[in-house]
Image 1 (cartoon, rainbow, N blue to C red):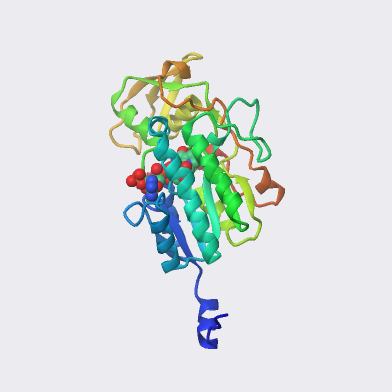
Image 2: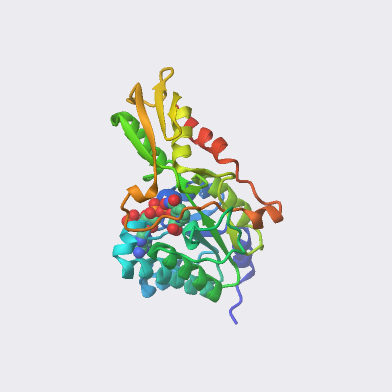
Length: 321
Ligand SMILES: NC(=O)c1ccc[n+]([C@@H]2O[C@H](COP(=O)([O-])OP(=O)(O)OC[C@H]3O[C@@H](n4cnc5c(N)ncnc54)[C@H](OP(=O)(O)O)[C@@H]3O)[C@@H](O)[C@H]2O)c1
């Protein structure tokens, strides 16, 4: 057995925990790395550092850096491309997660795996609880579920956190798409038959920070409270950036700009049309219902996720300069 000299042992105890974040150039990982940097020694990695699907590369990086915790946010997240590139999806999302879990076990690192609402089939009436059986209908969902299973099989000290309908400052998301469309389209079509909980990266990160220091390991749902359709989400975005809606009929709204908006370049008016998902010919089937209940967090008084409307307003406030 190797004993550390006392002086070194003391140093080990007082230094801040070292946290490795994968996918650190992605939408969630990039903000996570910035946010944790003040509190932890952060090792932020992405594809350029190593490919998570290659065991040797993962193993040697983790053996060299010996993190105390790993937050695994990297994934092949394009759900339509996953349908076409099935092998890559399973290699990155399933095998990649397995590789990280094996290496985490060797260095005894706590493991945080970011998972998804796509592990469910979306057919349930009402919210999904952690005890509901996954039944993914897409390659992306299947590969992420296999990733979850590898984490459970390899590790004891893990958190699996399922999130959905994510938006934040970095990367591409629904809010940015809507704002972009409000700059150039007179008719914007949005689906009104898929439901979920829009969730701000900031809230997910605060929730991770709350859970991570604990030993309350397990599978958690962590989305903002309440749910809506994409159409309702779009309406709320437009109202928050200064439009008022004039109801034409239940499927169409005329939006007019009330005052000068804090978003430069948006049009004075446009029409928002509610459509059904079958009008969009996406390769990957979208779950009809993605609403998750943060039941495990609530049972332990750990749920700090706000209502989605409150978070949306706070996020849009960050765009005001
Ligand atoms: N976005 C959502 O609405 C949503 C919803 C539910 C769950 N999630 C989960 O939340 C996590 C973060 O999502 P996100 O939106 O931040 O994703 P993202 O923006 O696509 O970021 C993922 C990052 O992982 C990297 N990556 C992909 N393949 C890799 C590989 N083989 N080796 C190393 N790095 C690799 C990507 O690099 P490239 O960009 O160069 O490929 C990217 O920087 C993911 O695990 C996702 O499954 C996301």
